[in-house]
Picture 1 (cartoon, rainbow, N blue to C red):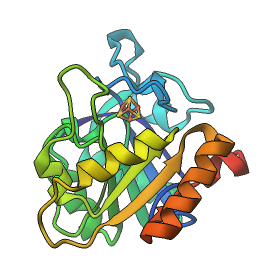
Picture 2: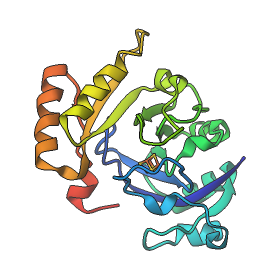
Picture 3: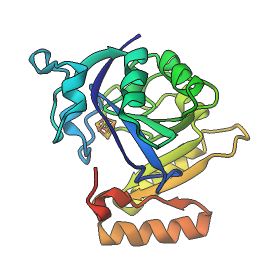
Picture 4: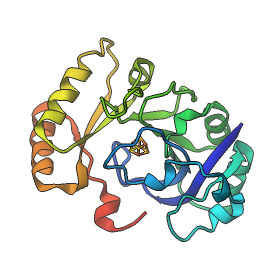
Length: 223
Ligand code: SF4
């Protein structure tokens, strides 16, 4: 399977359920959603003349829109060759679920890694059953692309960016559409560390037994 990759690097997972866990990030190029608060706008477009070799992507020193087309075997190969210690892999973007992630998650898990996907949920999620899926629902952000029900049902974690009270009301109404018994982690993430959003998230998390996701990489000033 061919995948467009913006970056592969080792760091700490800064958000959601796996916060603080050393992780290898595989960042995909390409996302059509267009969230205004997006931290990775350089991954939105797959510009033909910005295509590079995988090795050049591995040597990136800064975030940019350079990307490489590669496959799951080469991805595993570069990860193994770097000798990183992290055992957890975060497949993120961009929007990784524009692609069939079964070959990638199978080869990574067979090699002993645990996998996590971070997605908008706007596309069907194709991955191994063991993969941890974090969906950040997109509700009325794009004219036609919304989180689909299959993605919501598959989610192990729902991570929602919050700026104001109505975001929480929207999320609660949205979660009511889930009528299965699956236990999911619900994480609230204050947008841009705004003080009023942090206070709102803390109060809601305590009252509903949800989690606070603080994007610790931003506090620590790491990638
Ligand atoms: S879905 Fe994710 S990558 Fe795409 S625009 Fe929104 S925040 Fe950015």
